[in-house]
Image (cartoon, rainbow, N blue to C red; front, side):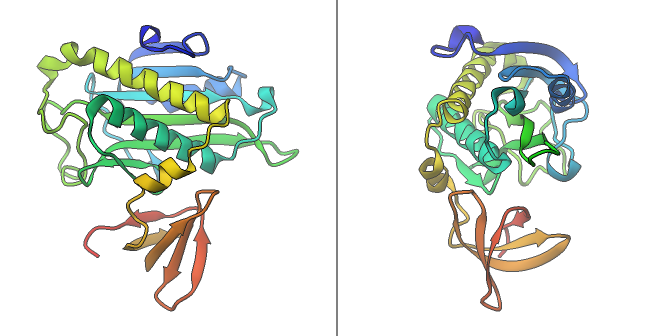
Length: 263
């Protein structure tokens, strides 16, 4: 992987595994124990990968990228909100996929990456707040990307919404070894972008907005276990969603689950 990195190859430390329960679980334990920023946990497969609200994330061996990146704000005395971290990771992944595949990507607020209306990547940011000042002590960015098409396809419950970067090429497990470099190059590009956004404060808001495909659409959103039909008016500079309810009320939302299909 470091062979594919240029400017920041000396900034990252990698721990690589064949199969783990979850890279985020490992990374969180390490972060609690004071692991340095830019520690990266990588696995070929996960037995219990998860996304938002504990939802299972399909992580078959050898077909995707499953990694977690530790950011240690406490040691660096750096202020970076969790919403910005997730958005930065989304742009980093989107831009990197586009560079290596020449395929257009879209971001579904706030943390899913789509190609051709199907999800190819999920991002989950987890962290711990300081009791003293309410700021993040550390954050773990979990990134799961479907790179190659699974040998037996996707599970029935996600088959209509999930895809892979190489879906149209129908790359199977037998071809994985020939495509290892594709995954390594993609990992390197993602890490370079995240480093730019987090440490060098590179601007990424416009890149996020141009890839967002919900603005102007009517969607169903679940907020605090209640479903609402709303229109998405925009996304502000803190990456909160600006929505209009059916009664005309406009609100700024920082958390919710969106279903945009069938509306």
